[in-house]
Length: 356
Image (cartoon, rainbow, N blue to C red; front, side):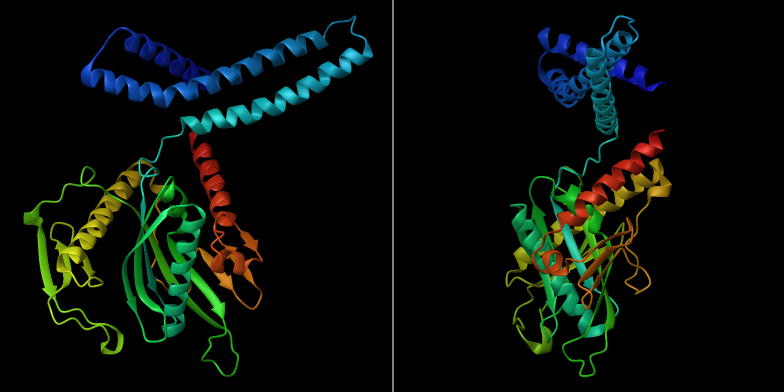
C-alpha cells in the first residue's frame, strides 16, 4: 500500500471514529473509540496540513507556467515554491514519524541500574559518577528520583546502584543510556599520573506496574538474611535484607538498603517486575525486527557505547559518532540532552528507513 493510500486510510478511520462517538455509543465501546480517536486525530490534522501544502505547491507551479507573469510576480511565486517544498519535506517527515509504531514503554518511568565493570576501585568511582549524572539530569527534567539500592565500597564508589526515575518521557529519554560506559582518567591514587581505562554498565528498564506484569506468589522464592555494608559498616542485627527469585525466569533481585524487611521486599518486587517486563518487551521487539536487538554487554573495556576522556575533557558516543568537549557539563552537571536528543533523532531516522 502506498504512502498516500495509508494517509487516506487514517483520515477515513478518524471520520468513522468521530461518527461513532457522536452516535451515542457507551461503555467499553465508547472508551475504546475515544482512545483511538485521541491518538489518531492529531495525526489526521498533520496529514491535512501536509496535503494542503501539496495542493498549494501544485497551484503555485501552475501559476508559474502562465505566460503573462511579470518578473516581480514570477519571483514571488518562485520564492513561495521554495518555501512550500521546504515545508512539505518537514511535514512529510513529521507525518511518517507519527505513523511509526509506538514503543508502549516510552510513557513509563525508568529503573536505572548501574554496575562497576572492569577497573576495580576506579570503575566503582565512575559508577558513582554516572549515578550522580542521572540524578542531576532528573533534576533538570523535573523528574522524581528515588534511590532503590546502593552497594558502596570503601573509597566512595558504588559496586552497584539502582534508582527509580518518574516523570514525563523518563524511559523514552533514558533508554538510550543502556550499555557500557567507559572512562579514561588518572585515578586519585595513581602517583605516576598514568591514565587508566575503566568501565561501568548501565541498564535502563521501563517501570512495570502490576497491570503490566502479573507475578504469582507461587512463582517466587523469598530469602531473608542480615544486611552487611562495606568493611562491616551498617550491619543489621535482624534479617531485613531480602533476596527474591522468580523461579520461571530465574531473575534474582536482592535489596538490603532499608532497615525494614517490608520496604526491602517492596523495592525488590518493583525491580523484579520491571526486569521481567523488559525481557518480554525485548522479546517482542526481536520478533518484529531482530536486527534492532540491543544488548548491554558484559562490562568489558572493548564493548562500549560512550567514552568519557578526562585529560581531553571529551565525551564520545560511538553509536552516532558524536564527540563533545563538555565533560563537566554532561557528567558533572547532568546536561545529558546533548546526547539524548541526537540519539533520539538517529533512532527515528533508522526506523523511518525500515519503513521504506
